[in-house]
Image 1 (cartoon, rainbow, N blue to C red):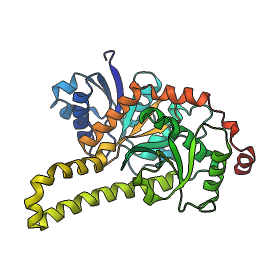
Image 2 (image 1 turned 45 degrees about the vertical axis):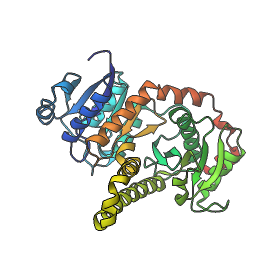
Image 3 (image 1 turned 90 degrees about the vertical axis):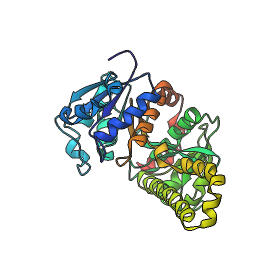
Image 4 (image 1 turned 30 degrees about the vertical axis):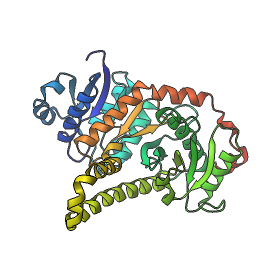
Length: 349
């Protein structure tokens, strides 16, 4: 491999691997000529497809993996198996052979193996899955999106801190507005851990602009830059948003097909419709990252296409160039987590 930026890829992860993975790398390589790839997986399946793309093959190294993490596998079943393409791809980051790993495979397994191999940054109890999403005024950061189905107040407060740091650097927002996702705006609404986390963030001396609770219907309005939830709630919210986006695009297409006047006016509205479609295309926001680890691990949607996978790879490359992991670690060193309400912490634990 050359001295270029190296990204490790689980070539067998996802619903249509390795074809979609390789086709995605073709797009990513064109957009990021400074990247080389380490591909882990079944060579007999990878090489015939890779041979179709000579330019990509020049910047790839394929390493054979005997086994694959399947979607139905439990994290406890695969976490110690070093022979899977996912484990080997993550281990390449730990060894310093790659700067980031990208996989479209089993989310739970990727989280578990990443945490085992890369380890959690000191001071952070649990890593979280975070993604950058669009709202009407720009973009926002949302976490956790599925890594931790159950969280206590301390976990939620730590997610808020990490989300705040990510928004400052990735979105270039000097003072991000941080909110907890809840079922209402009133102080007594929601589960106990949400109310406790709100008290921690309000009473602490952390440099966070905590604006309180945000309800799901307010997310697209741009009232917050960082939205914090437990993994169960965040994952449902994310998938609901993505499903709604697809519904809107389908309804626009149907409305045009069923209306003669709409067809006549289509040439005048085409630019606007294409802009709306692009803004709402979930593929363009593919690539959720695990924050809180000593290494960069990026999760692509398992059912995405080549474009979506290329976006995940591009996001990984961008974060590497920004020294994202080092930034998170250094910023956390400056944060006094003990400043969070000790009484509530003791009660939670």
